[in-house]
Image (cartoon, rainbow, N blue to C red):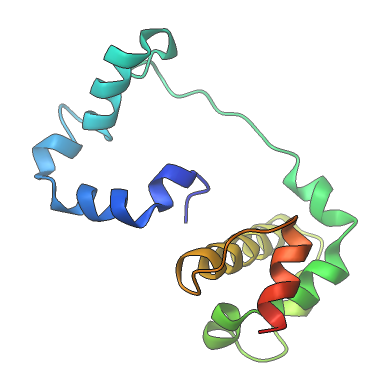
Length: 136
């Protein structure tokens, strides 16, 4: 899953899947239709320029909340259906890059599942949202 909200919108995704490939990729450039639209609407964004990476301090944010996040994510309906019982919580306690990325994916998936599969509105912060999914 990508953490870019517009690409998680069900209506937009349905529309994108119906588009012909030539509207999605042209001359080796992905997201062709989106880039073309953005170049007209907001040229200063330079949508055809080279990608530039950036980092978000997700690891630092998760570090101080490992136990709480692990317990909440492990209890999520969508995660419980996919993962072995007892494997998710401990994953949040492992301190290496691979485990951190896996924990982040499960956290993000559980929030996405809550919103788009369970159709629950996001009320409050991450912990409020995850707690309310467990209480269902």
